[in-house]
Length: 143
Length: 178
Image (tube, rainbow over all chains, first blue to last red; front, top):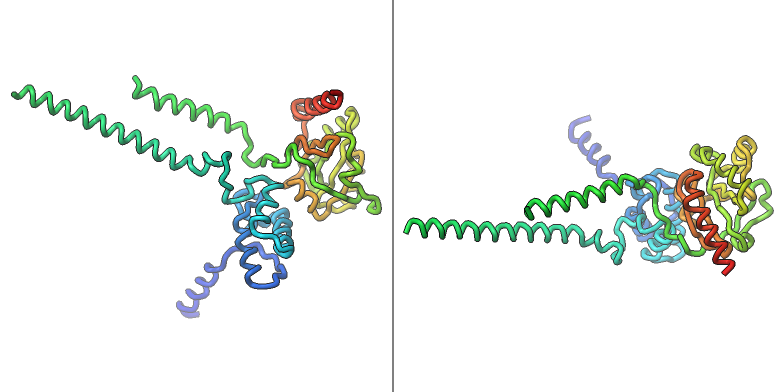
């Protein structure tokens, strides 16, 4: 096999998205895409560092089936996420909802950054003042 | 002095927080169903699938719902605790056989002993999803009105019974009297 063909083959392999394969009978392409998006945004509660799309756990398979059934029943994305969060907690959502309990999670990093910036600014100002005081003192002496 | 004070205090606080964090198992998910009515269910009994037990039929007295399976190795760890508790306690221990084969389940009970007043089967795991079950063993404490008061993930121990279950049962009894 020549180099080009080999490269193309390898490229095709790497471009595939990793999914746990369940042949589910979707009514149309839009539904399939919706399903893929949803299961990518939901955490597998057994293998907690994987999403439902990638996990091979038995429970993940059950939950994928459940998401599929809920889509068939005409539920919206938000309703499906709520359904799972009601039973397993907000932890199943990769994107935690914005509510008072999660304010620290969402705004914490920005707050810490501002705090750090504030400290640096304060220190720089103080050093400027001290330097200028010194400069003043040297000036005074030399006179 | 103040220059050293702030970082030192921040370090100390961080240290305390991290130390407290060491005691937590990050894999355990807190249940969002605590103090909420349990989901409705209607499941067949193990070995007598014509008979069905529903949430309705279990109302009237608090009970423990223990989720287990014959393939679950950790469930064997809690078995003796469950056995002892079922014999000594005033409340029933109901078993929920989760995602299991009924023959295997029956064989497991024959081999190790049956602590359950009744065993409901959920081979598909769908009732388990309603309860937020993500791994066996899990134990729920439900009160007489069918409200979930407590959930324990992992094998049940005497410590958990002492610290979490018995106090809640006592509280339930007291509130009934008043």
